[in-house]
Amino acid sequence: MSTTTTSTPKIFKQAQDFMPLKGTDYVELYVSNAKQAAHYFKTAFGFQSFAYAGLETGLRDKESYVLAQNKIRIVLSSPLRSGTLIGKHIDAHGDGVKVIALLVDDATYAYDTAMARGATSYFPPQVEEDKDGLVIRSGIHTYGEVVHIFVERKDYQGLFLPGYKAWESHYNPPTTGLNYVDHMVGNVQLGEMDKCVDFYKNVMGFAQILSFDDNDISTEYTALMSKVMSNGDGKIKFPINEPADGIKKSQVEEYLEFYEGAGVQHIALATNDIISTVTNLKSRGVEFLNIPSTYYDELEGRVGQIDEDIASLKDLGVLVDRDDDGYLLQIFTKTVNPRPTMFFEIIQRKGARSFGKGNFKALFEAIEREQEIRGTL
Image (cartoon, rainbow, N blue to C red; front, side):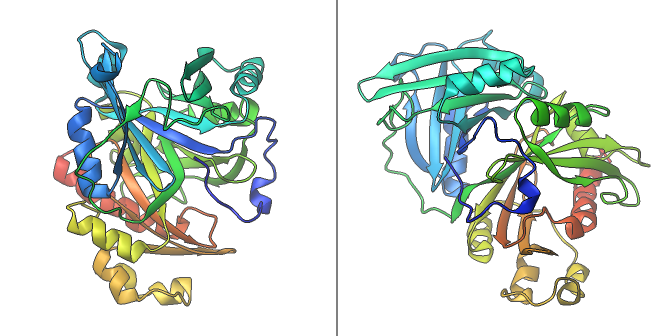
């Protein structure tokens, strides 16, 4: 589902947009127990029951629960038998993102264009049809085992996709104010970041809008490098990280070790009121990284005047950073899986188009404290 922007900032205009993308349609995670994971995302993050596919809809190898909150749709899929591709993915990586689905006007054109420009096929265009119309989907590989699926649904009036039915549930806790997917961050092995950047530039028509090296993203012990890729209107943004030399094991190295390969490190979800959203999430048991209170001592001097009460931000552990277009507020959960891999970011943009460069040191020191507790630093 598409995100909203009012104009196309200059930093995004480098993108060629020969493959127009309308937004993030859905994100699919392969998980060991989709039913229990769905309960967690509903209870903790305020997602709502939306759609279901499984034994009751004729599937015999997997089941999927679709959760929705405003423009966000998350699909949680689990195997129903041993030896499935989903099961093998979970064996290798634990729970994690498999599919980043992108909404397009023409899934065949998107696929053909990507293939002509060097993509590796995940599956060719296929028509999926039921009484509510038809959807055309196609897919290509990206980094690790993550894939992009192009979704064309202009001739479909159904709930989600053919093969799914409405998921009716009496248990739907109130939403928490999460609106859309702001960006998704991938971790890749040393030496793979530029290859991934080239893929998004050459195959997808994205532009590199920001770059951070180990001088920007480092602490006393660890470092990493990152480049941010975006489509032309800034609706789709993919920062790509790779490890850099450090005295101890960085968060990217820890991720790569336990995920056993490249993959999605975190999903950033946007809100219009981060204080309300984070207060709500904390009351539901969502755990966030702890930020030292000293971070807030010079906050106003560093970022200038902001609308929010600094005492409230300090109490919640929300970080603030400013760029030429405005400021942003952000906070990061602890990892949500048994393996120290995937986590979530909650972000509110008040004009800012960047990713919180001024917060890197405080954030990565907080992550290092968690690594030290886990014995993986």
